[in-house]
Image (cartoon, rainbow, N blue to C red; front, side):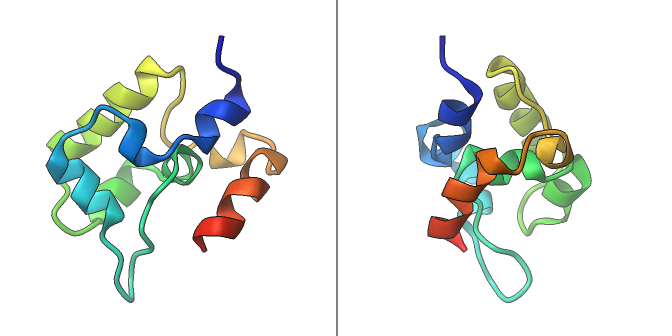
Length: 93
């Protein structure tokens, strides 16, 4: 069984997601940071996903489905111990 820290370390590129969703999450500009890890992804809310350029309801549904298959969901940032995130955010900020 894969533990929470291993799931959070996964890169978005390891998930079985559409090219459109992958590109939308990896897009970074002056307003949005690229989302490259599952830890960064679960910190987002559904509204955050919907606000990202080129992502809409279908992309948000896909994120929720993929995270649900891993036993995770959007908006976990406040519920998961921040220590689980520290080792990841250093490399991607």
